[in-house]
Image (cartoon, rainbow, N blue to C red; front, side, top):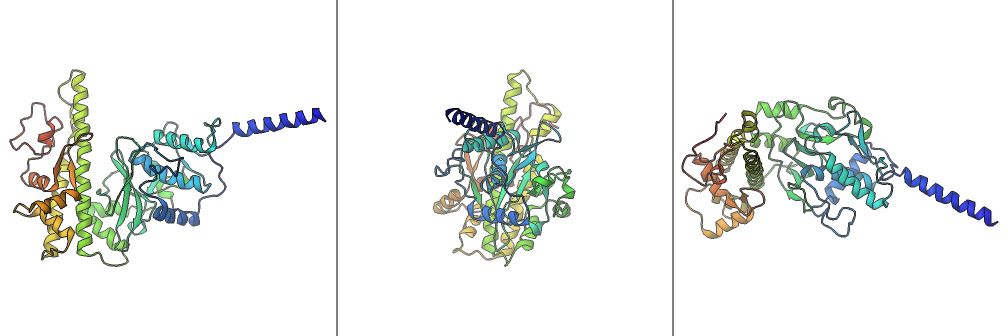
Length: 411
């Protein structure tokens, strides 16, 4: 009897060890289909919150360090985990291979720890560049919560909801990678698709069973947004107006449009700080290595002439919208913000405080160095912004009004 008990116990231990040795991150008990995609969209709309990584009541995700792409992948990963669905993406380092929840890499950990380590692994293996391979472009009228916007190598967003006025509200993280609240913005991403390889724009995750199929073979694939963007000469306001009209259940009010354009302008202006910071950091790096000036390719990678031109067009587009609205309504907060940005006369202090509470432009990362949106508009109008990546920070933002005298070649 004792021998039998010992054998049974030994068998149980061996079975448990065998089970642990082949443990997936989580078991897949369902398969993605249209029904699960609908549930995913509803979950994003109602459960995907800005505190997802800062809520101690959710210890698996608490203090997960993330940047923009990490948060995008985590949105899909967390829903898959919580509903025992497969999560599968392309393996960046091994062509034709995948990263999935079936990986047994963390067998020695508890189930919750396996999920957290898998999240960290996916974050390390992915970027906004890899999103082009794990997603595909969709028709603008088909944009839904849970879809994403990708600007490869630059930024990415989660589509959190689509309003009755046809606005694709977004959430996003940023750099550097750290635990943070996500930023939710009731406005479209401030990009227009322009990648010649069709790797950017509004996109949808590939389902696991389709992960190896090219984008053109994915259900709902569409190149419409790329052609439209080119037809509109990449005008952000005109492009987003078309999206809004395609998604809307009711007309967008003048106030709603003014607010979303100002929000997008604020995000676009603040995004410039990333490019300026990257250029200054790279310049410091090469000078530490003994080189004073960037090569032609390095200069092209870190200068911002196209971006600065689009910033000018952005201000001009909002001006045209305000001209179309016509009479100023002092009861409208968005109208008052816009007036504080564009008026010729200096706004009263309380109006500037309201505008600055709404948006300040961070001039570089990691420092409390800001300018007002009004000051940026004035510098853009005066053509004092400098796109040369060799220029010091005050010149880059037009704070210094005298012309920048380049000491390195410009290309």
